[in-house]
Picture (spheres, helix red, strand yellow):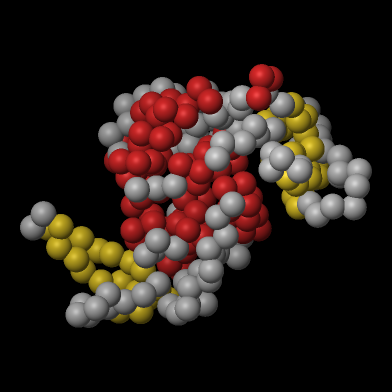
Length: 233
């Protein structure tokens, strides 16, 4: 189901305090509401800190559509091709760039799914500011991470944000405030709240793909393959 999502615009110019507070909840129609003010009734809501922002401006897209509408065709196409939930992809784009195809982070990540230059090159993305290319590359990268962590969405998202090395170092979501908040935001927006893995160990093994040796990682050792535990919580 596609919801009309509120778009967050962070006002980060000039001298700003440490953070701003935003609130989110779903109304009676299931629409996601995001605001810089808490809801007026006593209903449930989630609140997040936005570091280095003096405020949040929330606006709704008119006509019952959302800012994702312009990219829905590409999202559906590449999600289907890669076997990734389109709602998860939309949630990643919302949190990463608020559906701004020209977004650039202070670390150099680019476009809708905020691909780093090296990652874009590895994925064959020539112009990360073209939505079709960016979504294709971003969804392919999500697929790689989901495969790497045995379809554990939380670990894949943590690696998307902080890098696979950080996830393998700690054997779980790294204890970085930004990364932990990122995973909660994306899974909350997409409605995906996966259960924790039964085994906290990350395993490493060698697989063969098209005749080449490929290193794989996952939270469950594959059957019939010698797997080496590389880290624990």
